[in-house]
Every structure is written in structure tokens, then in C-alpha cells.
Length: 138
Image (cartoon, rainbow, N blue to C red):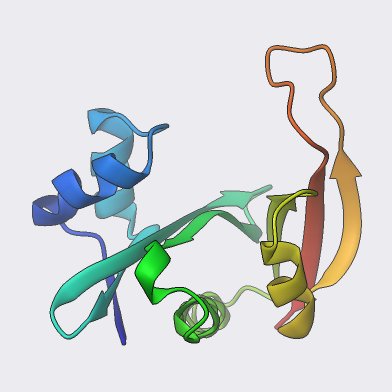
């Protein structure tokens, strides 16, 4: 698997997966190199993107691997790539999250992420299961 920064030509693939992104946000990810595409044999199989909180803490907003490529180590490889990219940029720690009812939390712990809190949005416009947060010192 190869991980590359998102490019303008990847827009249709990303937009099919990430329903929260619009043209402006997509172009910002390309320009700032905060979005990635995962490739397996010249086929795009997933995406991930991040923001930087408080100017010094990279937070992975989304990691998605196409269903038929799951449980084959691609997410682990992609996260290792991202962590290395963040370390090379001088960051000391990363932050990631997932909903309490999602399986990703088990992968994050296996990869050395430590639980560090959660948010509950009951009875709000963002009503969802608890969002669990994990940190990893690089």
C-alpha cells in the first residue's frame, strides 16, 4: 500500500466517501497537504485527513478504508504513515477519536493510543454515541 497526499484529481473519490466536505474544504486539504489517499496497486482504497488543534496538536478527523480492504493491515499502515509525517513536521503528539459503538477504538489501542476522554452530545443537533478520544506521544 502507498499513501499519498490528496490531489485535485482525487476529488470525486474523496467526495463519494466524505459527506462532510465541500469544494472549498477539499481544495484547502489539497493546498495544506492535510488529506491523504491510500492506494493499493493503483486503486484508491481509502482516505484520511486531519486538522491541527491549538497550532500544535494534529487531530485525525477521519480514516476510512473501503470495506473489501479492511482487516488487512491497511489502516495500521496508513496511521503509521500519518504519525511519521506528523513527527517529521515536528509535532510531539497526535489525537484521534471514534464513536463508542465503532470497532476502530480497539485498533487505536492496539497501535499504542491511550484513552484520554470523551464527549457526549445528547439532545443536541450533533446527537450521536459518545465520542472517545485517544492520544499518542510520538
